[in-house]
Image (tube, rainbow, N blue to C red; front, side):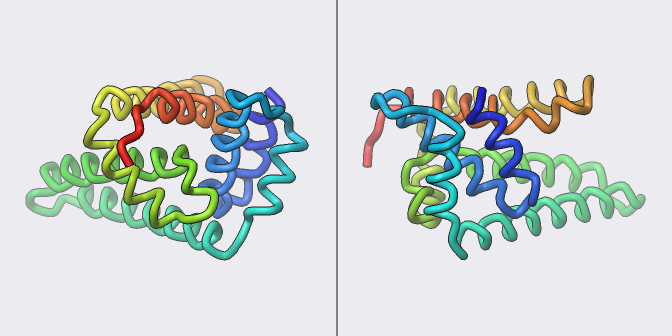
Length: 174
């Protein structure tokens, strides 16, 4: 629970969301290797690893979300083909979210986002069941936040736990 709360607090600056989720996944993965999963270890690891690449990943994520929202706003503006474009944008947005979350769960994300993204794309295609589970975890977090808004603050912790569990169960073929 302490890692979940630490993750929630670390996600507040928005551009730190990828680094915060990646760090939470690393701490939770370490619990399976008999390392403590505490907020202190989480913040120590986050402090050690927070670098320009992590903030760049956060800026790219924010830009992607803003672009997605702008595309959906344009689709609703009444342009011809808007409904088809909105559906296509939704599929592309779900795919991008899936790959981004899988990248956060990868151990490589602690040091190299490019390698983590590359492997996350492969994982998304190879492990369709895990990909469906990740999307269900996101939908569940969204529904919980929609039903009770303060739960939106707590969503990153359980989401990191789900991402780690799905990544750990995925057989590695490097």
